[in-house]
Amino acid sequence: MNRDGSVNEEELRRLVTFQEENGVDMLLPCGSTGEAATLNTEEHLRVIEIVIDQAKSAKVVAGAGSNCTQEAIELSRAAEDLGADGILSISPYYVKPTQEGIFRHYEAIAKSVEIPVIVYNVPSRTNSNITAETEARLAQVPNIGGVKEASGNIDQIREIIDRTPDDFAVLSGDDAMTYDVMCSGGVGVFSVVSNCMPKEVSTMVDLLREGKKEQAKEIHDRLMPLFKGAFVESNPIPIKYIMSKMGFGDNVLRLPLTPISAGAQEKIEQIISQYGL
Image (cartoon, rainbow, N blue to C red; front, side):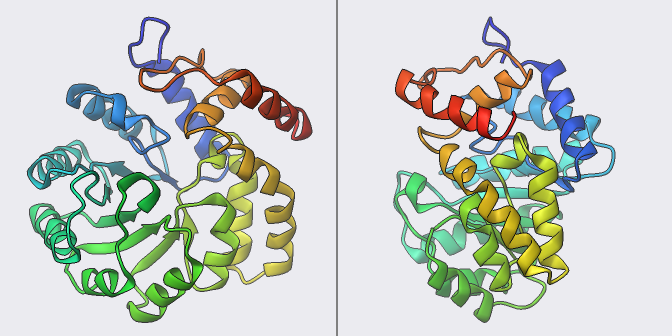
């Protein structure tokens, strides 16, 4: 954000280029880290448009979810019209739907667009979990291509991998679990920490894809304090502070997000120093 609260297009474009130059092959505008919850619809679509326009090689998977199925459909169609390669759609929050409601929600979205839909399971933010059984059902729906799993439950994630076809992409939604998820058969990560260390996270993922687990584990272990530190307060408060210290923007957040607290800032400053950020 600019200091007046508007979307900072220049810095967003710089960030896209920074990610691509350091090995990131998929970009996600308007996720939790991208502050989608504080954007109005016009801004939401403009951010997606900017990222698609700026990206030269990476695929763009646009955040387009809502707890209202019709709104999620409208956002998904708009993102598709803008040229997104896929959609990331969060499970309906607040309303606490049944598993059948979750299934029908995603089925309706998948039928409304032609680009792949990736399910996003994050119980800590939605207050409901998409079970492995439901995810296995969703994997059979044409046009649902995978899941971003941020349940924090590795047993559930392994069950999903076991119960879904090989072409159903299971991606980690939690940096700290990427190593375990990929060693269990996952194919990548929607990463928060890759914003500030894209080369390192990309290298770790590439090594795991190549089966070089020991080398990947070295990177995983080295980055673990950063993986944890990025969530010392609600995401994206810590990562935006880190990015501002790296020269990306002025660390402006919109309410109800607030600037990082003094105690959390002290911890993040130690991490910034530790990793030379």
